Length: 338
Ligand code: KG4
Ligand code: ZN
Image 1 (cartoon, helix red, strand yellow):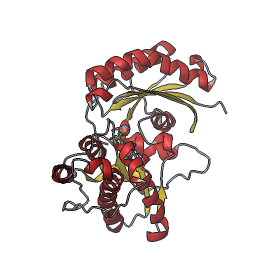
Image 2 (image 1 turned 90 degrees about the vertical axis):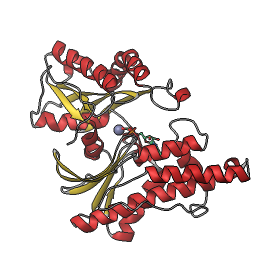
Image 3 (image 1 turned 45 degrees about the vertical axis):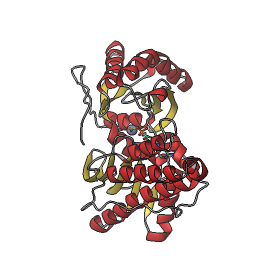
């Protein structure tokens, strides 16, 4: 049978990404990261959409070239409909719409959060695919959710953050420590050399399967202020132990709720997705949970953790098989649930 080539475009935040999938296999996966935001300590929406406009054509060209196919071989174009920054989403959706129209092929709208979860269905050597139903914990800069995944497009949020996302907790911690944005990966790097039990932080008490991270952020701020007042070199001298202790606290908060979710649902297949699933501590802890609790865990390949278009492509492929197409009147959505 003729292979199905899907071009996928992701532009929900500050990365311009394009990928080509051949059925459920990734044949190219390109990301242009935007460095303009670093000096502002966070993503500036207006700058993000301008950078997307500059990057989108070359990024798509590179993705097609790397895949070794021409536009005419594409079966469909998939794009991120939301959630995300409106100006950023609009660049990707406008581009996808025009291309689908010009090539006269189907257009497929993809939910970014579903994509973080369904990334586990990309066919990759050495990576198993979960079976339905499974639990997925989406941990990113914008979201922290526990989702019960009944089928590809049948998902139920059973727990979520009531304030900050876990990625924000990492990034804000980094900011307090004077590390550049986005600080999550740097906290991870320092944590590897530190003692996770060096400093103790209290965990929030949140009912059910929900999360809260704003209290931890305040706690860290006061902890650093107090210790720096006594010793101005405190952060520099103890950076590894501070990062390790904070990361340990965050991982414990996440794991406690996951354990609770497994207990409540009886589902022992657990997947993670989203930018924070790149964290080495979380990956290690989840791997150990297989032996420790008898779970089967699914940890995405590193390149499918932070925002990427391959995950949009796999959803595009599933929707292509189910003929879930959309027309050019479809609108971008800053907020959408499942
Ligand atoms: O999924 P993502 O790329 O974008 C959103 O949809 O939000 O996630 C980005 C988030 C940022 O907060 C970043 O600091 C965090 O993921 N992150 C990490 C690591 N790598 C990325 N946090 C902790 N450890 C990491 N290694
Ligand atoms: Zn994301």
